[in-house]
Each structure stands twice: as C-alpha cells, then as structure tokens.
Length: 414
Image 1 (tube, rainbow, N blue to C red):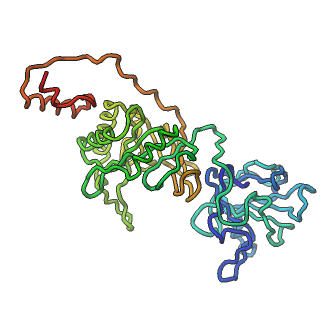
Image 2 (tube, rainbow, N blue to C red):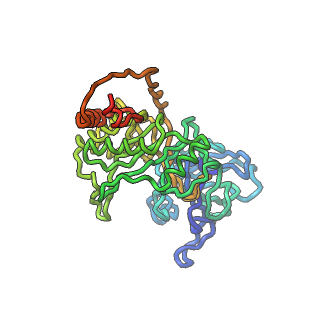
Image 3 (cartoon, rainbow, N blue to C red):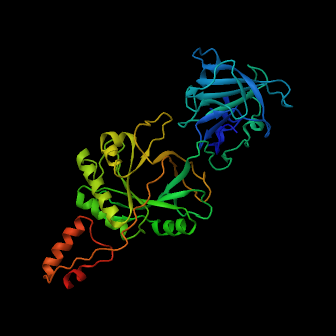
C-alpha cells in the first residue's frame, strides 16, 4: 500500500478512471489518504516486493508540462522484468516534502515523501495522487495491483502500524455514538461531561455511562477528561467534584481547556473565552489540586497555540500530566507532554466505532498513581455547633481535603 496502516479512498471521484468536470477531465490515477501515516511509501505489486530508481523528484511550474498540476512529486522507474504488466513508471503527486533525490534506489516500504496538497489537488484534504504508466508520457493505467486496494471509495488495510512503538490511544464522547467496545483496538480516555456555554450547568456526557461500562468491561479504560468552562477557581473545583460523583478514582483525569465556541467570523464567544491566561491557569490548577485530593491523577489537555497564549501549560506540566493536540507534521516538539493527539480517523475508520475519533500516542509513561496512606489520622474536635461544623466542612471542601465518604452529619457528632 501507499501508506502504513489504513489507506482511505475518500470519494468516488478519487478513483482511477473517474471523469470529472462534466466529462472533460479523466482521472488517470487514484487519490489515497493515509489515516495513520503521513509518509508516502514505495508500494509492492500484488503483495510482491519490487524495486526501482527515482528518476524525478521535483516541482514543475511550467504549465505547458501537464505534471505542473501535481505540485511536488516523485517518479520511480521500475527495474526491468519484475511485473507481468506494461507498467514501468510510478508517480506520487501532491507531496508537501520530498524525502528522496533523483538517482535514489528504492524498494517496497521505503519512504519517498510526506503527503500534502501541493499543485492542483482535488478537495481540501491531504492525499497522494498515485498513477502508473507504461512510458513517462503515456496515459495512466490501472494502479490497483500496485496500490494494493480496490478502485472504489473505502478504507483499506489493518489498524495503524506504529514503527515508533508508541501506544495508540483514543478519546471518546457522545460524538462517537454507540461504541462496540469488544472490537475497539485501543485504550481510551472517556469524556465524563462538560459545563454548558450559556447556563454554566454541569452536564454529564450523553454516552458516559455506556462508555465507562464498555471500556472497563473490555480493559480499554485509560482515564477521563472534562470539558471545562469554569470562570472561577471555585467552579473548577466544582467540576472536579462533579467528575468524582460519576467516575471511579485511581485514573488520570484531565482538565480540557480550549475555546468554548467560535463563530463563523472567527470570534470566540464561549463562556470562559474571555479569561486571562492567569485566570485560566488558576482554574486549571484548582481543578487538578481537587482532582488529586479526590484520588485521580490530574492532568491538562489543550492544543499547541492555546497552550502558549492562553494557559500556562508548561508550568502546569511541572506538576501534572500533559496531553497536547497538534496534527501538523512539523509540530512544536519542545512543549512537554505525556500524550500527543496527532490525528483523527475518517468515518468508519476504526473497528467498533462508526464515527470519526481522535488518535493519540502515549509518548511518555504516565506517573505511577500515588498510594493512599495505610491509616488515616483521626483528629477529634468538639463538641461544636452545627454551624461551626458546617463552616469547617466548607473550608476543608474548598481545599479538597474532605474524604469522599465523610458527610457533614458526621462533623456535627464529633
């Protein structure tokens, strides 16, 4: 195949031989997206390894040469007598970066380029236009024996091949609908809920109960996250309390900090979008302090540009788990993280899930969960009035110091 992992032919017009533009333009190749890999690789022939030499690795700007529409592209001339058909040349077009030079010897599996959208690429997604020819200037031939996929829209290939050895994780919410957890191949971070933009009400994710039960039953539960719209530290602590009322402790729990809502004109108008960097950082820290007191491994989720401008992500990562989203090929690797959100599958692209789902790498081992003390120290105070007991309880609760099983009625009795 062209990419490691899953290969996607997104639409019927991505196929070889499709006629576009009202019958005016014939598509001489097949457009393939890499769902788990951004590197274009030398394919085989019906499962057989083949080899050749790079004869072209360039971009053409002269529009009298029809390949100008391909942007940056690579052409490989096959070594003689490897395949029974008439194909001698393989073309890989619309690349964002070329990783081989003219004269390079290549074989099946070798990396040729980084996928892109240069030239006159159809659609708004990165893909490789893969075309095969008998001669350098002849018409495109059927590429399916080389692409290793049928000439029709669909997702092909196995689950992601991670040559780095980093574990793949997913994060899920009601957006993925009903999940068949017995088929899901990866551990997951499950959304507990969110705070509403307008009312500020704390809401449980519509699929939380089902996702919690399914993930636990199939040993796929890694942790949880909560989409915050807290505008004060007290609200952030209340969000952690809300999570503790629904989810088991002992797992990572992330404070999800990002824009709440963006209008079509690019204006951010979510409930917490006007917070200063210091205010948002204080809310995140308050959530994490409370989450730790409640028995979770606290962390912060955000994306690169937000992390540098709107929250002290690096500072928070000195004490808590970092989870950072950045789908660019050349992302900022200096920012700390334990989990890196790197991609999103297309619809139908993962076993057990019919909707799109985020893909993550566990790039750094999560810290070991703190073990509770073997014995709690008991301090007797009293007798006190109910009012004083309530006041002491409120102070302890605001600092995240109360035990989940301790009730105000007990305070009045000591």
